Length: 262
Image (cartoon, rainbow, N blue to C red; front, top):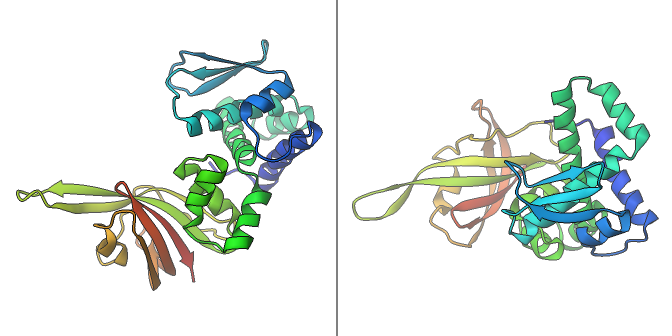
């Protein structure tokens, strides 16, 4: 769901103000932020969701099934953002005026809390400083994973948000057929997820197939190997193409790719 830029910026500012008001400097844990805000964290059984926030008791409940540290960290920050959003009377009132349909409002609130969570976990200012220091590259995926304790998917999203130019970041999935000689040959390579930089109006749809004449196909037997191609293209679901430089790396059957639009 697309969220207007002014709402995204207000959510980021809400997080930044919280960190400033509570004098939270440098790397922080969601447990520390929750404690400063007077929130309590409990583990428990939840149906179909990773976390929930109880407004009356000020309790964040985390699903027992959330065992990965990266996922737990993001979920906690997400639930903290529900608290912050609902206690910013002006912001919350504006959202209610803009989205009168309950289901639409719920989706917008969830999306904004994701945006707030990533600002807590990997502040935009710090990510942009890394880009300025090292240059924009798929190699920063690993830097963000390690420095900010992010999943690869969250790191790709954050890189796209902070990119200083027109580009699309994507995770591609290779689907394989097994032939009699047990040689693994990709049947298809498809877009599993994709994120635009703010300079890029065109979206790359999930499940878009990578054409078999695209140079990405020549790298599909790579393992943890970096690849790059200049003056190639990106193809959208409609079949239309745009010129692009491509760089990426294969990890466990998925390619993490930057399409730099030319």
